[in-house]
Length: 278
Image 1 (cartoon, rainbow, N blue to C red):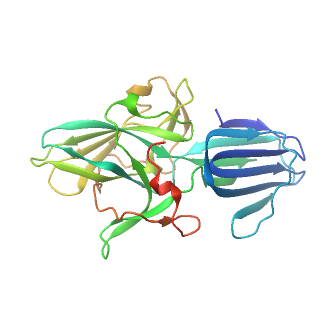
Image 2 (image 1 turned 90 degrees about the horizontal axis):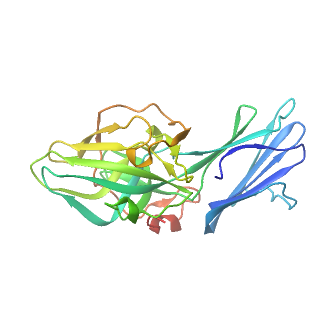
């Protein structure tokens, strides 16, 4: 597991590579220094080095971001935790999935993660593990919402979904109670409402999500399971939701996805937009 509590002596540094994220955390007598950058190459196996004797790059306002956090005295405890993104995630299916009227299906997907690092009760980092792409969900010239984009094949069998320590698995149960067929091209998931659970193998999961499509159109009622999904029974909670979930909320859920998007960090095209369930 790449998350958890660590102990750093004064002057000690931690260096890590997770996904496209590279990070450095250094403890001084009266400050913590947090430095990050995102590269183009993605590391699928998390790697944390402590102590680290290399040189920490300096803040340059282009590719490297650094912040110093001042304390009367720094403690030796550093907390690293996974988190869900701070915006909804629009999952675009590689191949459209159609659910006929009166049918239902459980779709297994994986969602991108963020890293939150804190020390002395202060949040030092809140950054994506893999660089995220923005997308607009809604009408091009009308109401909509800025979300993060992700791609998935939308597996119908859990065993077909690759395991990865840098993404969270989610079981999405879609019930089409309407008379007509429901084509799913894009599915908006309220990521800030979801908690994270770790199973015995260290795989992260969200609660199950129930999507109830009761009438024609792109609206659906959303609800969330209590605790880990049955596919990960016994998993322990490692992170709560960013925001309190709204139960049985009727929300704009399907389609209306503008493909492509732009990079959330550099406002340019991101490789992560094309990644499918890795």
